[in-house]
Length: 256
Image (cartoon, rainbow, N blue to C red; front, side, top):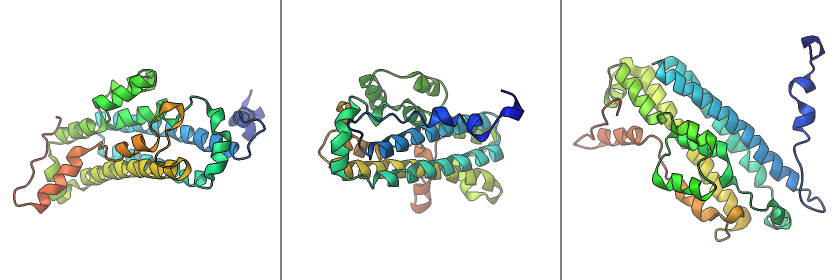
């Protein structure tokens, strides 16, 4: 198709896109469309978040502080968007969801490869995380790709090392404001991600109740509750303690 023939609909492949909401309930439940669209659109945002996190990693590897600052600002905007979408599902009455939940089969949000890749890219690499992946079919390719790159905390530490500074220095030296702003942007990302987790837990409990298992044999809200306290940037949290104690907590060496 030539540029002169390109239209809004063809450029965005709208015919294909709008045909992908295939309801499985029979007769079709009117709320299943809401359920599908929220999850499909979330996956589109996850795709973009992963793309931008890759760009952030590239900026770190290039020791480009201002570029990384711009990248994390966009990532944080995207996290706010995907979090706000959860409010649409709050309008789904539990009784309505129960009426079409059986048609979901073994599908579960825990099977989202892109979400798992975001977690791995951000720094979630612990044994429990990998065990959960194995229990749901093994480590998917998107997560394998993420695991081949250092987590964001390590990337940030390497950036500090490239500039010859420590975490303590960027929080005490006014000349290091760009690096301090970048550190705060990373913390904002973690907090935004944690807010998504928290609201997701609340949403699941609101619809399913706290004791009902999730689809696909998962633990539902009980499992999600455990994930809220997961940290991507422990060094950025630890440095704060040093400013409020008599004996400052020494931050990790840059590059470690």
